[in-house]
Length: 259
Ligand code: UDP
Image (tube, rainbow, N blue to C red; front, side, top):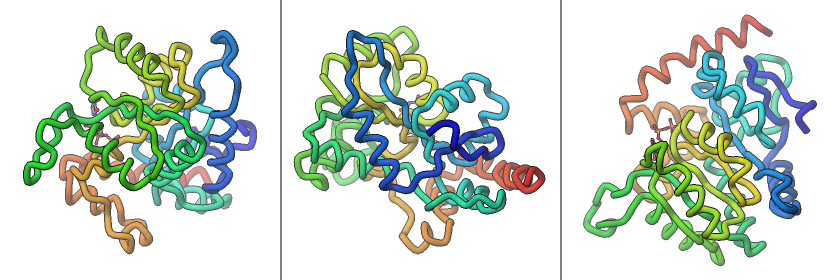
């Protein structure tokens, strides 16, 4: 699939719709891993902010280029493909695709490990007391996806020295699919660095999705997502994102220039 990718400001993305992406993931989950010769498949979902960071960050670029499935996330990347005159088959959000992959895992009896988020979730009305964001996300996902097998969770705040232990924990859980919500570029770099050591069949960076699934953050209303305004809702909830979001018009102007 790699040679058919669309280049959006040096980030090569796959021209697939949800069904195409799920077919690729089914292939990853069913691929044999003989004696450690193959590595875990890497799924990334770059949005404009990530694609822009990769222009300056060679490690992030290497991670994106090495990915087996690159799903452009958000309205900005979709609009960029239109500007380039090669519209992607459909606008996709990484969080929605990951949810569908989790449904696929449940249907096929695959085990899932959830990594990332704070060790202690912000406490609303006591129901989250003492639980991590990953544990809450696992609990709420299991309520929505019958048969989902979450075989382990871990918060996303660990040191470099602890990284090997985290990889061991994931491997010992027997996970087939790893969901990593460590924020970007940390999740892409963590996954890329450990692809050969991770024994899961596939792994995916999901940014702040765990915060949404756990109920710690709200997703934008559907009409805002439909209008490509999800970023505005996120900004309202997390004003600290202003600098990153402010860089997007410059990125899009670069796409226009390169048309
Ligand atoms: N996060 C984490 N470990 C870190 C930094 C961030 O697990 O070292 C988590 C953070 O708690 C949040 C998610 O990563 O759940 C997304 O963080 P952020 O909003 O900074 O990243 P983005 O969504 O922009 O990629």
